Length: 452
Image (cartoon, rainbow, N blue to C red; front, side, top):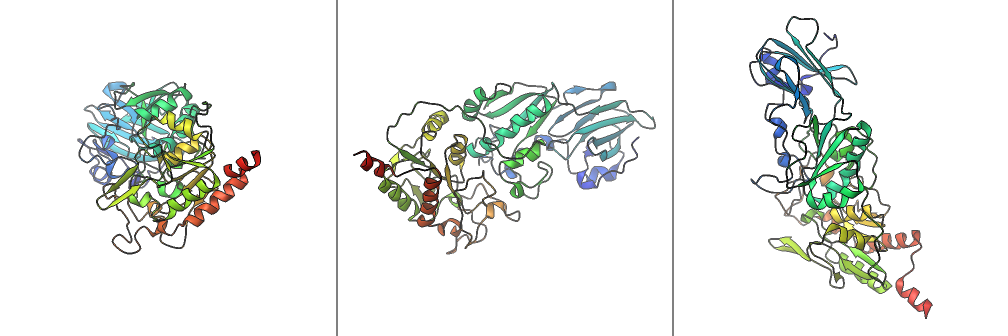
C-alpha cells in the first residue's frame, strides 16, 4: 500500500453502509445521494423553478457504470464512485497527479464517494483486507471514453461563458464528449463543434452509461467540492475552466457568422433587461439619455430584449422611448445575425451581452452589482466605484434567486441599487465616444452630410 499520508478530512469521502471506519464515515461530507443532488440551492445560474424538477439537470446513473473484479463497480460520474459487494475491503481514493491519498477506509459493503465532484485525476484502489496487492487499481483515463459535460441551466450568459472550456476539455483528453444543454443553446453551437455530441434539453441523454461526467455551475456558500475555487474569485465563465481542469483563459465560443445584412442604415443594438433588479441599470434617466445621444448621432437604436417590459410587484422596466422595438422571444441565430452587423452593442451583465461577445461586435457593458472581472473583458466596461458595489462577487453574500429585489446590504433603504444608480448617462456616453474613436466610427448623421 502507499506510504503517503491521507489528506485532511475536509477532502474525505464516506461510505454509507457497513463501514468499519466509523470515524471516517461521520467526518466525510459525501453520501450515497449527494452525487445526484439538485444544485438549485448552490448554483447561481439555475433558474428559480421552485419545487419543480430542473429540466436541465441530467442525473448520474444510479449504479456505477464500470465493472471491476469480484463484483466491484466504479466510475467517475460527479466524482469518484465505488460500489462494493459484501466482503472485507480496504479502499483508497488518490489524486494521481500528486500521489496524495484523498481518503482511505475499511468497508464491508456499500458506497465510497469522493466529495470532490470537479475534475481530479483520480486513482481508485481496492484491496481485500490484509492482502498486499489491490484487486482493483484503476487510474482515470478519459481517452476514447464516453464523458458527459453537463450544463444544468437554461440561462444564456452562463452557457455561453462555459462553452469554450467544454471544448477544451474534449480536445485535451480526446474523449467522446456529450454536451447536455438547453435546446436553444445547443442549436447555435452544434454545427460549430462537430467533435462534440449535443443533447438538447429537456430530453434524454445520449450516453446512458458514461465513464465520467462533470457538472458546470456557480456554487455559493463556500462550496469547494463542486468547484476548486469559489467562482466569485475567478469570474463567472473562467470557473468552468477550473472545474474541468483546463486553461481558464477566456475565449468567446464559436457561433455561425457571415449572414447577409438586412438593415441598410447603421444601427446600434441595446438590451436593457435582466433577470433581477440588481442587474438592471437603476439610473432613472440613463437609458433615455444614451438612446437620445445615439439618435442625435444618426443611429437607429434597436432594443433586442426578449421582453419589452419586465419587473415585479411595484417596479417595471420598460424599453427606452426612442428605441425601436425589436423585442420578442426570437431564435438566438436571428439575434446573432442582427448583432454581427451592428456598429456596437450596449447591455448589462446578462445573456445578450455574452451573445454579442460571440459575434465580436464591440460591447459596452454596464454593471455595478458584479465586478469587472466577473464577465468577459471589454475595454468599455462601465463601473462606478463611489458607492456600494460588487455584491454578486462578494464571497460573504449569497445571491437569492427568489428575491427579485435582492440587495444584500441596503435593501429597503435610500442606498438600494446605488451600484448602478450612480452610473450616469454621461459616464456611459464617454465610453461610447471612446469606442467610436477606437474603431474609427464617424456619426451616421455626419456621413450623410458629407455625401450630400
